[in-house]
Length: 164
Image (spheres, rainbow, N blue to C red):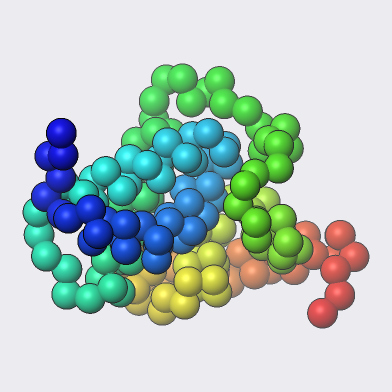
């Protein structure tokens, strides 16, 4: 029985376009493959049942990112989250590009307040104003977090011997 507001074709199209983005945002916040998969699934279930129309694919993408962030925040509050597996114990995942990019690996090591804005800016192409709206924080705070995040990232990359 399908109680979805949206058609299967519409959901499949949006899923195929944006599942990687939603997965990466969730993984950055949760750092646990199984919880990330659960969060990603929950985000798309919410999309299926969301009654309002979207103006464009960019609007859908922004909504999915904000919804993913909120879903992960809710999961992080849950009591069993303290029993999660540390990132260094997580086995290789099915997402192909996660470990291919040395810089992205280092971005993943940053605190969430630096990691998420840097990811959204450099990997998803959002402006700092858009990131400010998505994360619900001041524009100046986004810029500060990005500057500090870049400094910390540079140190991490230097420690690992990364060269441009």
